[in-house]
Length: 402
Image (cartoon, rainbow, N blue to C red; front, side, top):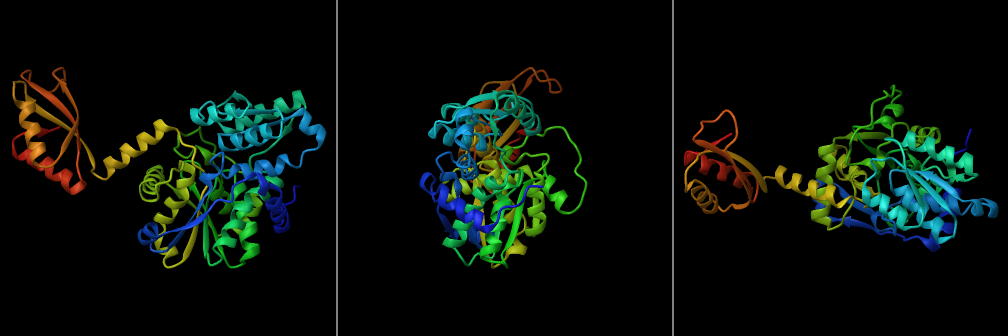
């Protein structure tokens, strides 16, 4: 049985990794505090060089290698952030690295890992499949496997995140930490509870991958096919045995949040805090928004665990959020197929203060009269109330919305 790291191990890790890592800020957000009804403190782990907390644990584990292990090299499996942490610090220390990533890993994370000098192997559709391949490579080539979460040295490295938060903001009443395999929350719980025994530690998972939540409650974890999630960094089917043990002992609860809630939290932090985070990082703030009453009036630390998000995915998130807020509306109208119809509609939208972004015209649609057509419009509005005003004006002029 692997032993859990101690607070002394975390303090030692902090000293070991300090020269090569960023001590990221923990900052108060006045606006998010007003929205959430509590004092919100954000830990900006997206400002690490690899844009993720993962390099804390990766570096601490790499620094423990013997000279022989360094010469032979290391291997890891990861959906992206652990991969970049291992690749960057292994490359910086002239240690060969092979990284196995699921084929669904976002392109930006694959590219960055290769750019750091690691050999990248895309294999499988889950972390479990990627891990099996990474361990096979280790056995064949004599490499040292660096687990992304179920390793005491990795957990100790991740725990330095909470150590810094409580050094900077000792009045914190609670921490909310994203949870996938559990390395971050396990390390943070050990550090935080040692520094402040009455602090409450909470985890946040996407409801598509709620394994740690079920395991904490003693519930069975059902095997399901891989799910597509915006929070791929915490898309873990089964946490580590060690992280489960630590989480059960020290964590108060794990929240499961929806994909929509994660998208909304990501967009809110981008717009309000002017900082870019990934889906996994947004899960923690999404959990706070979904449980406001529980944290009312308290000082809550949110670990923004990383900022590696594919630009195409980000653009979709922004557009979807604008649509939810009524700032972009999609209209489909049935019109008479004769000159002047589009011009009349454009005038009505303009008079209502809307702005037409896109237009599509379709005469081939079944189910409408042959002398009619459908007109698709993407329109910019101020908010949901303004969007409804535009719809009402078009309806009053006789344009039927499909």
